[in-house]
Amino acid sequence: MNSDSTILTVVGGGVIGLSVAWRAAARGRRVTVVDPEPVRGGASWLAGGMLAPVTEAWPGEEDVLLLGEASLRRWPAFARDLAAEGTDPGLAGHGTIVLAFDAADAGYLDVLAGHFQSLGRGVETLTGREARRLAPGIGAVRSGLHVPGDLAVDNRKLLMALAEAGARRGVQFRRERLSSLDDVPGPVVLAAGAWTGQLCTRLEHAVRPLKGEILRLRPRRGCLPPPSYTVRAIVEGRPIYLVPRADGELVLGATQYEAGFDEAVTARGVRELLEGAERILPGITEYELVETAAGLRAGSRDALPYIGEVGEGVYAATGHHRNGLLMAPVTADAVLAWLSGEAPPEEVGAASPARLAEREQV
Image 1 (cartoon, rainbow, N blue to C red):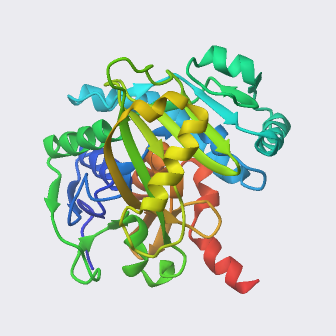
Image 2 (image 1 turned 30 degrees about the horizontal axis):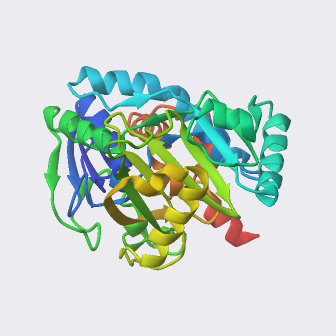
C-alpha cells in the first residue's frame, strides 16, 4: 500500500463507505470508492432504515446502545448537511412502536422494558388497545412499547444522496472487487461489509455474513394505509419490522440466519415474513407485493462493529450488523478524526478492533 496523506481509498460503497467518502472529500481529500456495485449492491440498499438504538438494545449490549445513541444525536445535523449538498435523504421522526403478539412475546417486551428502565431510558408501555389506538390497522396484539425518540430514514434516498454529494465533491468510483490491498493508495478504510474479512487477515474470522430477506409492499386502492409509525414486533418469538415510506410503500423485514454468501430469496423467508406481518397488520394481505430481495449484513462476534486501525494506515469500519445506517455518522466522524490526528468520539472506543487480540490472550 502506498501512503499519501491527501489521498483516501474507501473499500465499499454502502452507507458506511459513502458516508466516510463524502465527509473526507468535503475536507479536501482526494477520495476513491472501490466497489463492484456501489450504492445498490450491498445490504444498505435493502435496509429498513430504522435509526432506533433503544429498540435494538438488549441486556449485555450496553456499549452498542451508547454508540448507537451517540450516532443518533448526530443524525439531524448529518441529514441537514446532506440536504444542503442538494439531496434530502428523507429523515423522519415518527418514532417506533414495539408490539408483542402473544403472552410469551409480551414476556420478551417486559424484559426489554425493564432493561430500558434500568438504563434510565424512558419508554411508554402500551396495552393492546392503546397500541391499536396509536396505530390504526394493528391487529389483536397483547401489549407494546412506544419509543417516541426513534428516527427513520429512506435508505435508498440516503444512499443516492451520499453518492451524489460525494461525486460533487470529487469522489471517484472504481467498479471492481479487490482481492488484496497491494498497490492500493492509502490510507485505506475497509467498509466492505460482509466481504471485509477477505481483505484483512485480522478480521478474517471476526466478520461474517448474516443473510436477511426483505419485502416491499404497496397498499392498493381500498386498503388501509400503512401505520405512520415504524412498527417492530415479536410474533411467536420471531422479530419483524414494518417501516413506512413517504411514497406510501411499506418495507417488511427481516429474516436473519447463517447462510454464507448466499443471496437468494427463499420461499420460506417470504412466507415467514408475510405470516408474521399478517398477525400484526391484517390488512397487509391485500397489499401489492412489489419487491423481494435478500442481502448480507456484516455480523461481528459481539454485536459491536469494528471501528479503528487494523494495520498501518488501514482502518476498519465494518461489522455494523443491523446498525449500519444508524451508526454511519459516528463511524464517519471517527475515521475522519483519526485521519486528521484528532480524538474520535468517546463512544467509539468500545468498538476498537484491538478487543479481538485482547480476547485471544484471555
